[in-house]
Length: 474
Image (tube, rainbow, N blue to C red):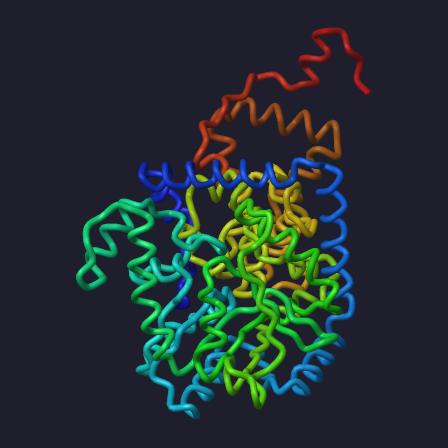
């Protein structure tokens, strides 16, 4: 992605004009919401396990610096090499250094949102290294030359017919068959050969246990296990917030994540990685590396209110229930994290000057808050970012990017007008005389009046109407 600010409004209008896209998302979201609801039919159980998972994440964040130090200590003791990256550029440089040292030419990747944040694939390809996404959804969008449209289901914007046509164009000897089983088997045959030949496997991390130095990955397809055991080198990437204190903290997260994400009672594969292959063991990589990325997370952590952003376990449930996301899809955001969680995370990472539109792509309906399995106050954080855009506290990158002296003066005038009955009468009388021209002349109403029909003033103020009914002035 270049340095220009993405145009969310233009991308959204294009998405809304695409009936195929709208239909694909509507069917997918309806199915995901109903499956999730069925998994949490017992309100008491949902309340209890949700509170437990939220407490796990809150406790980990309250001890984050010491837990990260403990994680490095235990991982190192287990034989895992730990690398720290302050920025995505540093993380990409670390990955390239490991690949150069192993003379790697082919990399297979399990699902990892952090590597999407890093734009790692483009970096590796520019260096002449072949990289293949092994998650089926990620493989599909990689073939299509696009980015994921959902953090759990990357190709959710495409239907079976569209995927069949894509495979026919991109995979040698592929038949033009709109059959999900055939398409899955076709992708599996391509990927199997790559797993065997790969020099390095890469993955994300769902939770890293400070107590034991264990990297936990959950998945449904088995590709994650293949990426982390077949190639001789495994590189895992995680945001620094993914650490938990104890091994017993992992089950609540594992219990909630698949049920919230896809409506499954449990994920198919749970991988616990605590080091490279030891002498006498028959499988596993000879080297395991853990890259811990900051990329603005330390700044988020420093603010007690914004810190709650880091609770996220990346289930994607907030997207499935968001009335904005379900209408425009993930690509409209042009960001690695779309939907409600993206609207609060991406502006803090990339800056409000570039991503200031994202927090405004929200109806404040609170649906995302009601279903978040770790109780992130997304709407409150969204409101905070809107304020930061015009009245910065210094806590958010790019704060004040939307500030306007003219608008500030206009609001000050509005406040003064409403603080004085006399000023209010004079101002409303003047506006009634100006008629429909008045709203568009006020800077604070510019965005509103640009897209809405402006009502005409009735000619009488509320005070006038009250007096006509015999209501005395207060």
